[in-house]
Amino acid sequence: MTDAGAKPSELFDDGELEKAFGSELGEGPGAAETPVPSAAPAADAGGVGAPVQQSGAVIQSENAPTFADFREGWSLGLYRDPVIVGVFAGTVLGILGVYVVLRRAVFVTAAITQAAGLGVAFAFLLEIHGGVHTPPVVGAVILSLAATAVLSVQTDRLRLPRETLVGLTYLAASAAEVLVGDRITQDAHDITAILFGTAVLVRHEDLILVLAVGGAVLALTFLFHRAFLFAGFDPEGARVHRLPVALLELLLWVLVAVTASVATRAIGALPVFAFAVLPAMAALALMERVRGAIAVAGAVGAASGGLGYLFAFFFEFPVGASQALTATGILLLCLTVARLRRANAVLANPPFSAK
Image 1 (cartoon, rainbow, N blue to C red):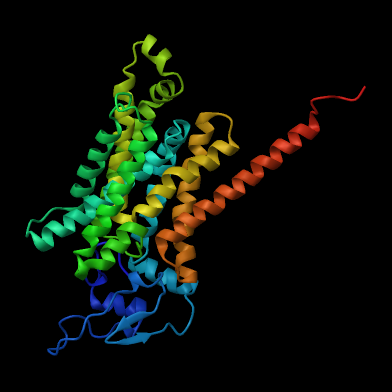
Image 2: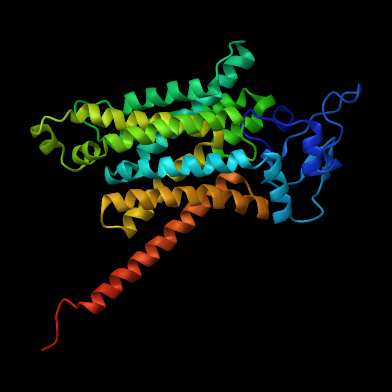
Protein backbone atom coordinates (compact mmCIF):
# COMPACT_ATOMS: atom_id res chain seq x y z
CA MET A 1 0.00 0.00 0.00
CA THR A 2 1.25 3.43 -0.83
CA ASP A 3 0.18 6.99 -0.50
CA ALA A 4 -1.24 8.99 -3.38
CA GLY A 5 1.33 8.81 -6.13
CA ALA A 6 4.19 7.36 -4.08
CA LYS A 7 5.12 3.73 -4.70
CA PRO A 8 7.55 1.74 -2.59
CA SER A 9 9.88 1.17 -5.52
CA GLU A 10 10.22 4.94 -5.86
CA LEU A 11 11.11 5.42 -2.22
CA PHE A 12 13.36 2.46 -1.38
CA ASP A 13 15.54 0.01 -3.27
CA ASP A 14 14.71 -3.69 -3.63
CA GLY A 15 17.09 -4.73 -0.87
CA GLU A 16 15.45 -2.51 1.73
CA LEU A 17 11.96 -3.61 0.70
CA GLU A 18 12.88 -7.29 0.79
CA LYS A 19 14.48 -6.86 4.21
CA ALA A 20 11.33 -5.19 5.57
CA PHE A 21 8.66 -7.34 3.92
CA GLY A 22 10.45 -10.57 3.00
CA SER A 23 10.76 -12.26 -0.37
CA GLU A 24 6.99 -12.14 -1.00
CA LEU A 25 7.41 -8.90 -2.91
CA GLY A 26 8.86 -10.83 -5.84
CA GLU A 27 11.64 -9.71 -8.11
CA GLY A 28 10.18 -6.27 -8.72
CA PRO A 29 9.32 -4.41 -11.93
CA GLY A 30 11.62 -4.92 -14.84
CA ALA A 31 13.30 -8.00 -13.37
CA ALA A 32 11.76 -10.38 -15.87
CA GLU A 33 11.28 -9.88 -19.58
CA THR A 34 7.83 -11.48 -19.56
CA PRO A 35 5.26 -8.85 -18.60
CA VAL A 36 3.30 -9.63 -15.47
CA PRO A 37 -0.35 -8.55 -15.30
CA SER A 38 -0.72 -5.68 -12.92
CA ALA A 39 -2.97 -5.99 -9.90
CA ALA A 40 -4.60 -3.58 -7.53
CA PRO A 41 -2.23 -2.47 -4.79
CA ALA A 42 -2.91 -3.22 -1.18
CA ALA A 43 -3.92 0.41 -0.58
CA ASP A 44 -7.25 -0.31 -2.23
CA ALA A 45 -8.03 -3.31 -0.10
CA GLY A 46 -7.05 -2.64 3.44
CA GLY A 47 -4.51 -1.42 5.88
CA VAL A 48 -0.82 -1.61 6.47
CA GLY A 49 -0.69 -5.36 6.71
CA ALA A 50 -3.44 -6.12 4.18
CA PRO A 51 -3.05 -9.05 1.75
CA VAL A 52 -1.08 -8.23 -1.38
CA GLN A 53 -2.64 -9.28 -4.69
CA GLN A 54 -0.04 -10.28 -7.27
CA SER A 55 -0.38 -12.10 -10.60
CA GLY A 56 -3.94 -13.17 -9.85
CA ALA A 57 -3.07 -14.71 -6.49
CA VAL A 58 -3.61 -13.34 -3.04
CA ILE A 59 -0.66 -13.62 -0.67
CA GLN A 60 -1.88 -13.66 2.91
CA SER A 61 0.29 -12.55 5.77
CA GLU A 62 1.16 -15.64 7.78
CA ASN A 63 1.47 -13.79 11.06
CA ALA A 64 -0.07 -10.63 12.43
CA PRO A 65 2.23 -7.58 12.41
CA THR A 66 4.37 -7.30 15.50
CA PHE A 67 6.21 -4.47 17.20
CA ALA A 68 9.47 -5.98 15.91
CA ASP A 69 8.14 -5.63 12.35
CA PHE A 70 7.23 -2.02 12.99
CA ARG A 71 10.59 -1.28 14.57
CA GLU A 72 12.41 -2.83 11.61
CA GLY A 73 10.33 -0.83 9.13
CA TRP A 74 10.93 2.30 11.22
CA SER A 75 14.69 1.73 11.12
CA LEU A 76 14.51 1.48 7.33
CA GLY A 77 12.48 4.67 7.15
CA LEU A 78 9.36 3.00 5.77
CA TYR A 79 7.06 4.13 8.59
CA ARG A 80 8.95 7.08 10.03
CA ASP A 81 7.82 9.68 7.49
CA PRO A 82 4.08 8.85 7.53
CA VAL A 83 4.01 8.82 11.34
CA ILE A 84 5.77 12.20 11.51
CA VAL A 85 3.42 13.64 8.89
CA GLY A 86 0.35 12.34 10.73
CA VAL A 87 1.53 13.68 14.08
CA PHE A 88 2.54 17.11 12.79
CA ALA A 89 -0.50 17.54 10.53
CA GLY A 90 -2.73 16.56 13.44
CA THR A 91 -1.03 19.15 15.64
CA VAL A 92 -1.36 22.03 13.19
CA LEU A 93 -4.90 21.21 12.09
CA GLY A 94 -5.97 20.64 15.69
CA ILE A 95 -4.79 24.12 16.67
CA LEU A 96 -6.44 25.75 13.65
CA GLY A 97 -9.58 23.79 14.41
CA VAL A 98 -10.08 25.68 17.68
CA TYR A 99 -10.65 28.92 15.75
CA VAL A 100 -12.88 27.06 13.26
CA VAL A 101 -15.07 25.40 15.89
CA LEU A 102 -15.41 28.64 17.86
CA ARG A 103 -16.78 30.23 14.67
CA ARG A 104 -19.24 27.34 14.26
CA ALA A 105 -17.90 26.78 10.76
CA VAL A 106 -17.06 23.08 10.94
CA PHE A 107 -18.38 22.18 7.51
CA VAL A 108 -16.52 25.04 5.89
CA THR A 109 -13.41 23.01 6.64
CA ALA A 110 -15.02 19.95 5.06
CA ALA A 111 -15.75 21.88 1.85
CA ILE A 112 -12.20 23.27 1.67
CA THR A 113 -10.68 19.84 2.30
CA GLN A 114 -12.83 18.26 -0.38
CA ALA A 115 -11.81 20.98 -2.83
CA ALA A 116 -8.16 20.25 -2.05
CA GLY A 117 -8.75 16.58 -2.84
CA LEU A 118 -10.33 17.59 -6.14
CA GLY A 119 -7.25 19.65 -6.94
CA VAL A 120 -4.98 16.65 -6.41
CA ALA A 121 -7.18 14.44 -8.59
CA PHE A 122 -7.37 17.10 -11.31
CA ALA A 123 -3.58 17.34 -11.36
CA PHE A 124 -3.40 13.59 -12.05
CA LEU A 125 -5.98 13.99 -14.83
CA LEU A 126 -4.05 16.80 -16.51
CA GLU A 127 -0.84 14.79 -16.54
CA ILE A 128 -2.41 11.55 -17.78
CA HIS A 129 -4.77 12.85 -20.44
CA GLY A 130 -3.38 16.29 -21.19
CA GLY A 131 0.34 15.67 -20.89
CA VAL A 132 0.63 18.70 -18.61
CA HIS A 133 2.74 18.02 -15.53
CA THR A 134 1.12 19.76 -12.58
CA PRO A 135 2.34 19.07 -9.04
CA PRO A 136 -0.64 17.69 -7.08
CA VAL A 137 0.03 20.11 -4.24
CA VAL A 138 -0.30 23.04 -6.64
CA GLY A 139 -3.67 21.74 -7.81
CA ALA A 140 -4.79 21.27 -4.21
CA VAL A 141 -3.77 24.80 -3.21
CA ILE A 142 -5.46 26.40 -6.23
CA LEU A 143 -8.77 24.57 -5.76
CA SER A 144 -8.85 25.03 -1.98
CA LEU A 145 -8.17 28.76 -2.33
CA ALA A 146 -10.89 28.94 -4.99
CA ALA A 147 -13.30 27.27 -2.57
CA THR A 148 -12.26 29.74 0.12
CA ALA A 149 -13.02 32.62 -2.24
CA VAL A 150 -16.45 31.17 -3.02
CA LEU A 151 -17.25 30.71 0.65
CA SER A 152 -16.24 34.29 1.34
CA VAL A 153 -19.04 35.62 -0.86
CA GLN A 154 -21.73 37.44 1.08
CA THR A 155 -25.03 35.57 0.74
CA ASP A 156 -27.29 38.41 1.91
CA ARG A 157 -28.11 39.48 -1.62
CA LEU A 158 -28.87 35.87 -2.59
CA ARG A 159 -31.41 35.62 0.24
CA LEU A 160 -29.84 32.31 1.26
CA PRO A 161 -28.12 31.29 4.51
CA ARG A 162 -24.40 30.76 4.37
CA GLU A 163 -24.82 27.02 5.02
CA THR A 164 -26.33 26.58 1.56
CA LEU A 165 -23.12 27.90 -0.03
CA VAL A 166 -21.05 25.53 2.11
CA GLY A 167 -23.22 22.59 1.09
CA LEU A 168 -23.05 23.57 -2.57
CA THR A 169 -19.25 23.79 -2.49
CA TYR A 170 -18.87 20.48 -0.67
CA LEU A 171 -21.26 18.57 -2.94
CA ALA A 172 -19.83 20.05 -6.14
CA ALA A 173 -16.24 19.22 -5.10
CA SER A 174 -17.20 15.69 -4.01
CA ALA A 175 -19.09 14.92 -7.20
CA ALA A 176 -16.36 16.36 -9.41
CA GLU A 177 -13.73 14.36 -7.54
CA VAL A 178 -15.58 11.11 -8.20
CA LEU A 179 -16.03 12.00 -11.90
CA VAL A 180 -12.37 12.89 -12.30
CA GLY A 181 -11.36 9.70 -10.53
CA ASP A 182 -13.47 7.70 -12.98
CA ARG A 183 -11.17 8.92 -15.77
CA ILE A 184 -7.98 7.92 -13.98
CA THR A 185 -8.37 4.15 -14.04
CA GLN A 186 -4.66 3.36 -13.90
CA ASP A 187 -4.29 5.47 -10.74
CA ALA A 188 -7.56 4.54 -9.06
CA HIS A 189 -5.71 3.69 -5.84
CA ASP A 190 -4.40 7.28 -5.77
CA ILE A 191 -7.96 8.63 -5.81
CA THR A 192 -8.85 6.26 -2.97
CA ALA A 193 -5.88 7.57 -1.03
CA ILE A 194 -6.96 11.17 -1.65
CA LEU A 195 -10.54 10.51 -0.54
CA PHE A 196 -10.03 8.29 2.47
CA GLY A 197 -6.34 8.51 3.32
CA THR A 198 -4.13 5.44 2.97
CA ALA A 199 -0.79 7.00 3.76
CA VAL A 200 1.20 3.90 4.64
CA LEU A 201 4.14 5.40 2.79
CA VAL A 202 4.72 9.13 2.38
CA ARG A 203 7.18 10.67 -0.01
CA HIS A 204 10.01 12.50 1.70
CA GLU A 205 9.24 15.70 -0.25
CA ASP A 206 5.69 15.61 1.10
CA LEU A 207 7.10 15.33 4.62
CA ILE A 208 9.33 18.36 4.06
CA LEU A 209 6.42 20.33 2.59
CA VAL A 210 4.08 19.50 5.47
CA LEU A 211 6.72 20.49 8.02
CA ALA A 212 7.61 23.74 6.24
CA VAL A 213 4.04 24.88 5.56
CA GLY A 214 2.81 23.71 8.96
CA GLY A 215 5.59 25.58 10.74
CA ALA A 216 4.81 28.79 8.87
CA VAL A 217 1.09 28.40 9.56
CA LEU A 218 1.71 27.89 13.28
CA ALA A 219 3.91 30.99 13.41
CA LEU A 220 1.24 33.14 11.74
CA THR A 221 -1.51 31.64 13.89
CA PHE A 222 0.27 32.48 17.14
CA LEU A 223 1.19 35.92 15.81
CA PHE A 224 -2.46 36.79 15.08
CA HIS A 225 -3.93 34.75 17.94
CA ARG A 226 -5.59 37.63 19.78
CA ALA A 227 -6.83 39.26 16.58
CA PHE A 228 -8.39 35.98 15.37
CA LEU A 229 -10.19 35.52 18.67
CA PHE A 230 -11.41 39.13 18.85
CA ALA A 231 -12.66 39.09 15.25
CA GLY A 232 -14.43 35.78 15.83
CA PHE A 233 -16.07 36.51 19.19
CA ASP A 234 -16.97 40.17 18.71
CA PRO A 235 -16.61 41.37 15.09
CA GLU A 236 -18.44 44.62 15.75
CA GLY A 237 -16.21 45.44 18.71
CA ALA A 238 -13.17 44.55 16.60
CA ARG A 239 -14.29 47.03 13.95
CA VAL A 240 -14.68 49.71 16.61
CA HIS A 241 -11.06 49.07 17.56
CA ARG A 242 -10.19 49.45 13.85
CA LEU A 243 -9.22 45.85 13.30
CA PRO A 244 -9.56 44.64 9.68
CA VAL A 245 -12.11 41.93 10.48
CA ALA A 246 -12.72 40.85 6.88
CA LEU A 247 -8.99 40.61 6.21
CA LEU A 248 -8.41 38.61 9.39
CA GLU A 249 -11.18 36.19 8.49
CA LEU A 250 -9.73 35.77 5.01
CA LEU A 251 -6.26 35.18 6.44
CA LEU A 252 -7.55 32.50 8.81
CA TRP A 253 -9.33 30.60 6.04
CA VAL A 254 -6.33 30.91 3.73
CA LEU A 255 -4.19 29.31 6.45
CA VAL A 256 -6.76 26.53 6.78
CA ALA A 257 -6.88 26.07 3.00
CA VAL A 258 -3.11 25.90 2.53
CA THR A 259 -2.65 23.50 5.44
CA ALA A 260 -5.47 21.29 4.21
CA SER A 261 -3.98 21.27 0.71
CA VAL A 262 -0.53 19.99 1.61
CA ALA A 263 -1.91 17.59 4.23
CA THR A 264 -4.53 16.16 1.86
CA ARG A 265 -1.83 15.38 -0.70
CA ALA A 266 0.10 13.46 1.97
CA ILE A 267 -2.52 11.71 4.11
CA GLY A 268 -5.92 12.14 2.41
CA ALA A 269 -9.04 14.24 2.87
CA LEU A 270 -10.77 12.13 5.54
CA PRO A 271 -8.08 12.38 8.25
CA VAL A 272 -7.48 16.04 7.39
CA PHE A 273 -11.13 16.90 8.05
CA ALA A 274 -11.08 14.80 11.22
CA PHE A 275 -7.93 16.52 12.53
CA ALA A 276 -9.40 19.96 11.80
CA VAL A 277 -12.56 19.34 13.82
CA LEU A 278 -12.45 16.53 16.40
CA PRO A 279 -9.37 17.54 18.45
CA ALA A 280 -10.73 21.08 18.82
CA MET A 281 -14.10 19.77 19.97
CA ALA A 282 -12.39 17.55 22.54
CA ALA A 283 -10.21 20.41 23.80
CA LEU A 284 -13.06 22.92 24.09
CA ALA A 285 -15.11 20.36 26.02
CA LEU A 286 -12.30 19.94 28.56
CA MET A 287 -10.80 23.39 28.88
CA GLU A 288 -12.41 26.67 29.91
CA ARG A 289 -9.69 28.98 28.60
CA VAL A 290 -8.89 29.22 24.90
CA ARG A 291 -5.13 29.01 25.35
CA GLY A 292 -5.51 25.76 27.25
CA ALA A 293 -7.87 24.47 24.58
CA ILE A 294 -5.31 25.27 21.87
CA ALA A 295 -2.62 23.28 23.69
CA VAL A 296 -4.94 20.32 24.30
CA ALA A 297 -6.20 20.38 20.69
CA GLY A 298 -2.65 20.20 19.35
CA ALA A 299 -1.87 17.29 21.68
CA VAL A 300 -5.06 15.42 20.74
CA GLY A 301 -4.37 15.95 17.03
CA ALA A 302 -0.82 14.63 17.41
CA ALA A 303 -2.03 11.60 19.37
CA SER A 304 -4.70 10.88 16.77
CA GLY A 305 -2.17 10.92 13.95
CA GLY A 306 0.40 8.73 15.70
CA LEU A 307 -1.86 6.29 17.53
CA GLY A 308 -4.14 5.99 14.51
CA TYR A 309 -1.20 4.86 12.39
CA LEU A 310 -0.19 2.27 14.99
CA PHE A 311 -3.78 1.03 15.19
CA ALA A 312 -3.85 0.62 11.41
CA PHE A 313 -0.50 -1.20 11.42
CA PHE A 314 -1.21 -3.76 14.14
CA PHE A 315 -4.83 -4.45 13.18
CA GLU A 316 -4.32 -4.14 9.40
CA PHE A 317 -6.83 -1.37 8.79
CA PRO A 318 -6.72 1.61 6.38
CA VAL A 319 -4.61 4.39 7.87
CA GLY A 320 -6.84 7.40 7.19
CA ALA A 321 -9.96 5.81 8.64
CA SER A 322 -7.99 4.56 11.64
CA GLN A 323 -6.67 8.06 12.36
CA ALA A 324 -10.16 9.56 12.06
CA LEU A 325 -11.64 6.87 14.30
CA THR A 326 -8.86 7.37 16.87
CA ALA A 327 -9.68 11.09 16.99
CA THR A 328 -13.35 10.19 17.44
CA GLY A 329 -12.53 7.86 20.33
CA ILE A 330 -10.45 10.52 22.06
CA LEU A 331 -13.28 13.03 21.58
CA LEU A 332 -15.81 10.66 23.18
CA LEU A 333 -13.43 10.07 26.07
CA CYS A 334 -12.97 13.82 26.59
CA LEU A 335 -16.72 14.43 26.45
CA THR A 336 -17.25 11.75 29.10
CA VAL A 337 -14.55 13.23 31.35
CA ALA A 338 -16.00 16.73 30.94
CA ARG A 339 -19.50 15.53 31.79
CA LEU A 340 -18.30 13.68 34.89
CA ARG A 341 -16.31 16.71 35.99
CA ARG A 342 -19.34 18.97 35.68
CA ALA A 343 -21.46 16.47 37.58
CA ASN A 344 -18.93 16.36 40.41
CA ALA A 345 -18.85 20.16 40.50
CA VAL A 346 -22.63 20.28 40.85
CA LEU A 347 -22.58 17.72 43.64
CA ALA A 348 -19.83 19.61 45.46
CA ASN A 349 -21.66 22.94 45.11
CA PRO A 350 -25.40 22.28 44.84
CA PRO A 351 -27.43 25.23 43.53
CA PHE A 352 -29.86 25.01 46.46
CA SER A 353 -28.40 24.19 49.84
CA ALA A 354 -30.67 22.55 52.41
CA LYS A 355 -31.30 24.73 55.47
